[in-house]
Image (tube, rainbow, N blue to C red; front, side, top):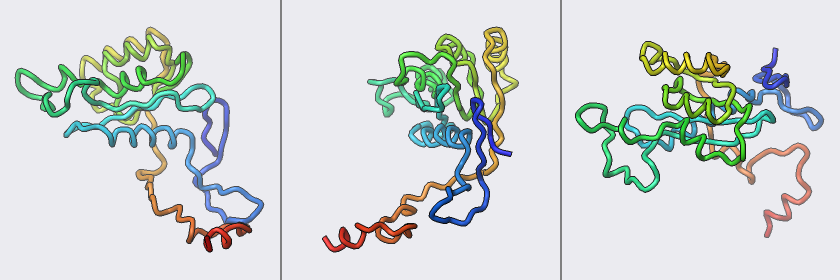
Amino acid sequence: MGDICNGKTETSQQSHSPTTNSKRLDYISWHEYFMATAFLAAKRSKDPVTQVGACIVNEENKIVGIGYNGMPIGCNDDDFPWGKEGKETKHLYVCHAEMNAIVNKNSTSLNNCRMYVALFPCNECAKFVIQSGIREVIYMSDKYAYKRSTVASKKMFDAAGVKYWQYVPKNNKLIIDFSEINWTNMQQVPISPFKNNEEQL
């Protein structure tokens, strides 16, 4: 069975033998692609404890917003606290990934979009999600389900008709290898007629 995303079915993660006339079948699914994009965005976060990313996708499976948790623009992240204890904590200042993805949108509208995010949104981010028109939230972890903020999020999502569900990946890891596409050593089928000429330039 392939993944179904907005009515589209695709088959992925199957073994294949590369030929000149057939496509490769071990490509990642839409859900893997968008959740992996959220996790990649999280790598930009400077939070020493929790790095979260969010990816917003429209009905055509096009990414329209990406964000990660970090300090607001203009607030030097060396001058503001990253700790969780004390009178002044990061919670007073940090913008969550969901908020940043929404304000960073490259589309005029987020109506009927869906959001991929590592952690279930807090109540403040849930407000942003609802107000922006996003209709579906796909999350990886609900480890804060016991918190009042998460309970409030679900209560608001249910009332507003925002669908939410937990994504369970088929693979625990997706490796990004920058050396994977090495033009000079890569095998091409068929061989490019211009490759040898360009190598001699």
